[in-house]
Length: 122
Length: 375
Ligand code: FES
Image (tube, chains in turn green, red):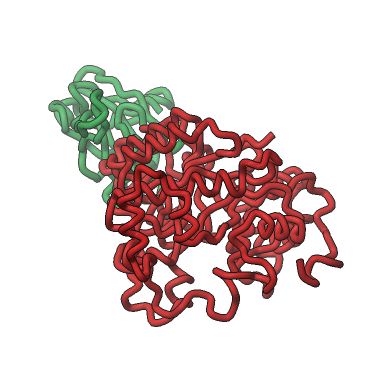
């Protein structure tokens, strides 16, 4: 499915048509997940840097932050955060960074829609 | 002084200044009553009427008497009472301590005083006594935190504001065993605010006099003082550190510095690993934290070193442990005159040759000079 060595046609666009949809595909021997977040597509390796769990099989969640008033706890980024199924580390799907420690991150791959195909750039 | 004073071989050759960041006085209730504010006369009368004020005003209890094999609370060497500045200076001379930062003994159980007004009056009396008897002679080598009553954070803030600018005041001491609620709770915000505004570090010293009925150490089922004492200090420190970090005290008070005392060093790496692990795994429960707990510890927390523990089987392990902790977070302390004290050589002899000279000088005195602004 590769195209020019970096472009990988991995799925049909309708498989990730709706926000919250995801597919896990093979890209050059590596499992990669493509997520639809608010209509935009993002791809991360299906691999957790903690202990090698299949990260992208975890729940798509939000995360907790302290509100402007310094008191309230607010739940934000709904549907943008993947929670590792093994120990609960949370990664921002739109950047690949761990939400609590940006030094811990997985690669974030660009994704394009090309005709009816989903193309991962990697 | 006694025969101990003469002929001790000093080995601290590469260290300019040794700062003892946890030295004690052994104050009596009678001494405090003498220094009680005249406005607190009614409370003074109540306390005077107690046949056993350590139990009927404070709630100090031990499973068996503390340190029965040594003279902890009377006289370490047999010819000096330890509640005097002369005794303290003798200890400093004998052990080569250039500066001492004092802490109370009975006052470590201040959190056990049920009556809030009595706790406030006793804290104020202690501060008046320690400043007058130990600090105010202008020599500048004996320093003290302000002792504050954790029961009354608003009154504690007033005490801090009142004393912060006095010469020789270098911190705020919160007797830290038996704190209810624990020190991460917003209950203490007025106290932290006052310490931060006055640019004083908050110091947390645990104590086995305060283990009667409060987590993290329930003395009830400890059958001996040995069991009680072995665990009260590290358990208090772990619980308090956990509470303060996960309730984001360092984020809420960004200019505040923290000092933990009397738990030794070995518990710190384990606790850092554990807190970092929970920060990442239970992240929705720590929204107030912006970085790994261990980073706050490295940047803003210091730990006094005593009690190091017995390291004779593997002398090199202590230096390795200190590398794990981070030498820049540690400050030597003796705990004198309590009988589990560490002379400076107990630390120095184990680290010199293992850590570089700068790290050694930092632990023995330079870091404390900075934290307590001693220069
Ligand atoms: S393997 Fe992902 S959180 Fe542990």
